[in-house]
Length: 84
Image (cartoon, rainbow, N blue to C red; front, side, top):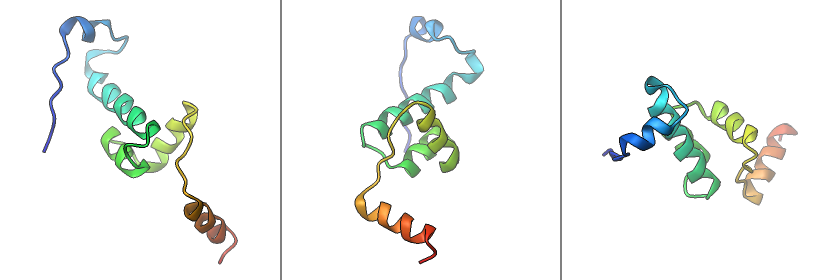
């Protein structure tokens, strides 16, 4: 399934992005917004943005968007880092 957005030409023209880069730009913006609102997981937001998870994680870091970690995920990551 896919969704098509109808964005008025005047709005698209106001974007400071070259026409060939608009789709990627808009998908990244939507993905970041949905991740920031805890609507999408990191993996699904990265998929929407068309980016590898690590690159998307770096992008949200540059934007100051906090990573969504549960306590269990933090503990699992720390145990992995300790070699457990």
